[in-house]
Length: 317
Image 1: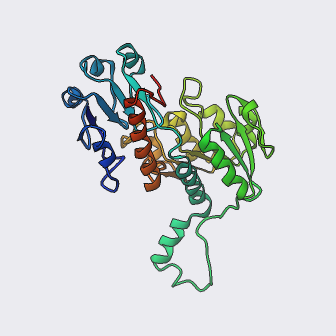
Image 2 (image 1 turned 45 degrees about the horizontal axis):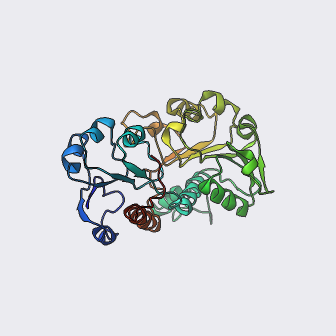
Image 3 (image 1 turned 90 degrees about the vertical axis):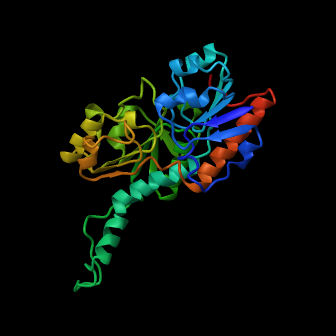
């Protein structure tokens, strides 16, 4: 069985072993693939693995030998699922591999906004402390999280872990989710979306990208937020109307934002958030901690094994 990986570099830049996949078939690995190279590189493949590589209806129509697409991620909007279904191609994804690491990164962004550790460390290394007559100083106001309110939009695996960390910090937790009846933790309060925007000191996005949630952060929702509130997004970039968030940051409408995802990745140079004040942006790395990628590769391999045994799991097609 021929297995082709079209964009292997982000999952494994060299610190993981591909050996478990070699054991499942004849493996070919490409670090990156342009749209024009997809068909040629996949022509003989029975199994194709992709992370963010786009597989369109046009691509799939030219790949009659393709039987299985393994998405090495949770989101699978990069694959034309309807076209795959019509051709009888099984498509699977991987869930839950990155929940601890994404929750950790969510708070890394938040702590960056409220404690400014890197800013102060850079200041010390530049000699500011050495030349100071006082025993301490701070370059910007510092904010205590204890007693503040964390508002979560979405409470899946990641949101639940974020809620647990927030509670450990002594924060109150509000949540708005599609199925509020599924929330049974007494310390988490279900509220309407408007109430969440109004009451939260920190809002963190952990919902899937759907027609309903696209640009859920916009000028109207931002207008409901406290001027001292922070916005975090480790979910999907298009959950935010970026120009309107940038304007809110410039106008001091909210205190800051911490983002790991943008609507276009990599972002064009004119993305307004790149020049917005009080905006931390990391390059979609919340999922990329070594242990998370290790779990992801292991689960992707297990998905293929189940498929080869005739009992596919995590099927999304």
